[in-house]
Length: 463
Ligand code: GDG
Image 1 (spheres, protein in one colour):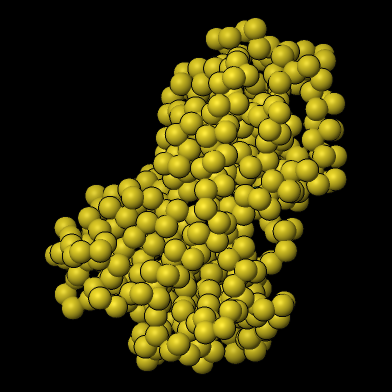
Image 2 (image 1 turned 30 degrees about the vertical axis):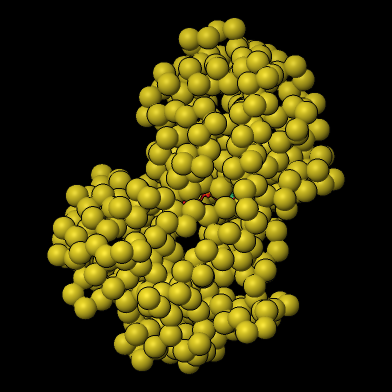
C-alpha cells in the first residue's frame, strides 16, 4: 500500500487465489489483479462448511501485501444463501430470466442472515479510515448491516452482473428492501450505462427517489452515487501469457490437430446466461447453410462446470452434450469431428494459447455483465495473424468493442451469418478490426477499473 493511501478492504463470496491458476470466474480474476497491485484485506467465505457452534476462528493467510481472511458457513446457509437466493433467485432474475427464477422465503432469510453474520465478523477487522469495497450479488445487504453495527467509513458496492429493468426486478418479493439496503453504500458501481439506468429507474419509479448532479440519486435522506465502471483485464499481462511456453505448447497442439482447418473456440463457465445452446445451433446452421465449411472448420467449446448442484445447470449440461452429439452424428466424417465440448478447466496460460490458435472466438451470451473472455481473446492474438471476435450485443463488453462482429445470439441465422463472415474475412479487415479492439482493450492502465471506483468512493460525500 502506498504511503498515505487508505487501506482497501474487499469483500466477496469467494476469496483468492492471488496467483494466475484460479478456477474459471471473472470476479476472482478482476479482484485479484486489483489486490495484488494495491494490497489490503480480502474477506469472504472459506469455501468450507462446518456446524454452527463449531465455526472455526476466521482463517487468515498473508501473501505479500494482501491478507485473506475467510470464515465458514453451515450447510444450511450454503444451501439457502448461495444455491438458493443468490443463484436460484438473484442470478437468473438479474440476467432477465424470470422464467428460471425461484423465490422462497427460507432462502431469502438465509441470505439476509449470512449478510448479517459476515458483516458482524468483518466489523471488528475494519477501521473508519478504510475503504470497504463489497462485490456482487451475494452481498447486497452487507453494507447496511455494517452501518447498523456502527461503521462510519466509506463503503462501496460493485455489481459484476447486469441489473435488469425495474419491470423485471419488481418480481423479486424483497425488491424494495434490497434496493433500500443498497442505499447504505456511498457508491454503487455497474458495468454499463444500461445497468446503471435500470437501477436508477428503480429508485425513481419504485422508491420515489430523485436524480441529483454527478450521477447521484436521492431516496429519502440517503444520497448514493450510482455510476458506471467497466471492468478491464491486465492486457499486457495476458499478452505475455499468450507467448509463454505453456501457451505455445497448447497453441501448437491445437494448430497441429486442426491442420488446414480453421479453429473456432468458445470459453465460458457452463452457465445458461452464456448462450451456449444458441451458439451450438448457430454452428449447426453454419454447416447447413454454408456446406463449404464441412470438413474445413472445427469448433472447440471449453466449458468448465459451474454450480453443478443446481437443476438448471445439470439440465444445461445434458442439453449441450446431446446437441454436440447430434451435430457430430449429423455431419462428422471418418476424419473430421465438427464440434468438441470439454468440461475440464485449463490454466490461464493454456487458455491464452487456445485463444491464439483460433481464427474465430464466439462470445455470445444472452446477457452478460461485461465478459472478460472477449477482452482476453483480443489481448492473446498473434499480431501477424489475428483472429475475429463474434460478440453478442447483450454482453457489457460490446460497448467497448464495436469492431467485433456484433450478433443477436437469439438468432440462429445471425450467428451462422456472422460465423461465415468471420471465417471468410479478408486479412486486411481482420487486421483492422483487431487493431481497433486491441486499442480498446489496452486503453489506459490495467488499474483503471479499480482506481476509478476507489477514487469515486474516496471522493463520495465531498461536494
Ligand atoms: C462475472 C460476470 C463479468 C474460463 N474458463 C476457464 C477460466 N475462465 C476464466 C476466463 C475469464 C473468467 O473465467 C470468466 O469471466 P467472464 O467475465 O467471461 O464471466 P463470469 O465468470 O460470468 O464473470 C461477467 C465478470 O464477472 C467480471 O466482472 O465480466 O459479466 O458474469 O477470465 O478466462 N479460467 C481458468 N480455466 C478455465 O478453464 N483458469
